[in-house]
Image (tube, rainbow over all chains, first blue to last red; front, side, top):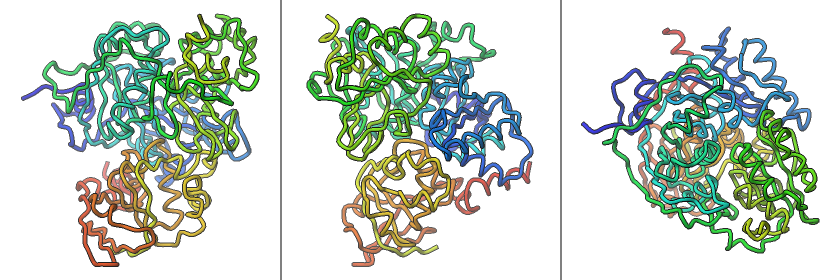
Length: 422
Length: 166
């Protein structure tokens, strides 16, 4: 009998089984179920149809109003109100109000709500972010969330796993975002459809937790069910002092079976830019050189963490945003916002003439706070560049890392950071 | 259950932002959402789609976000069934969970079709027939567990049964 991958072992544990096979359908207990101000209203509507007086465990349901908040209009205000009232009525412990909240996938790990070995579902496709901590985490729909709130369970087809082994020391200005954009570019937007993506190798062993979260976050952009790194000292250091209780980390067996293994030597990887209209359209930044941009967004569940803001500040220190460009910087959580304030990053941004906002998903999905007009081009550290994603159907979004975004905001066109910081 | 309808043909990787742009997600009403279904990639769809029409897509239909508003908008538009070479996984489970019929069809079907032609779909048997020439195609069968969710009319009905038995 061959060994099992981390994901197979976590799902077997959740299903109360000795082992599971890829392709097998399992019903598992979930450790956490998450919804936001767009997906939870549909879930609440469905949950209400069941006529239940309580959720399966009020401490294991997380509600974060982050997409259209601070409320962009009356309809959004009413959706947020629905969440707030449901949280109050059902005693939901982890409800995060505006002023205390953050973009959900930056917030939950930061708050210690994600632990290695956990099974987490979220009615948001980027729930796969938590795989960076060695959890099995995946996006589902609103009705799945409603069912999980009722039963504390979810059904899954056990995914097979594709392994990505990264080798080599990353060049300057290259990070987790470039690794994942490059990977998606290699395999395509459905290259990992229904699969788990295991990220490993010497490069990953040396990658910061923020960089790992960025990578796992975008597993969905290759169609992945989840993306993960097995827990190590970097994971455990990150977890120290956070509120997460005891956990039991899970590791793949040495003889686990992987559907496929890719080896990437990334020692000469250039910063990557994904051209519209899909995240797999990634190319070295040099090929994007000279593309003029109207707006730059630094933030989101992909790249709104402290390390991202530090990278942007390093580029923006003592410089000014190009007169033709609007630069929006959105720290992903309230805590990151405060840390950025304390480190002087916010002052750097404001002096550079960037607009700095309270946490929100806002522009990433064309919700609010930075919508594009017809014909405009944006460069963003976000995760999707589909047609109309940030506004008008004839606007365009290019994706990149925070340093490239900051440097390009200064240059007024897409550039390698070393062209701005010499 | 037998469905017959006119085909709306789409390509590969139709994402959920295309199916229902995020700017309309302040509503959860399928009829309201349907007014903007496919707006950015097929502006005539929402106005011209008829009750019972089918959507036929290529690979990875419904990729992108987890918004259940996407299958809700399609259902609200009166579409009777979505047939595609393959589906993105969250869209696939969402469609089953809300009772929107979907089928994975073989390559040859999507290649053969022209927009506006008509199909007959036998959902129970997974049999798809082109009305123009009578050619038949067999869709991939559902695993029994999913068949059970579909049979009970969606996940919430399934959960209701589960709760009764606990």
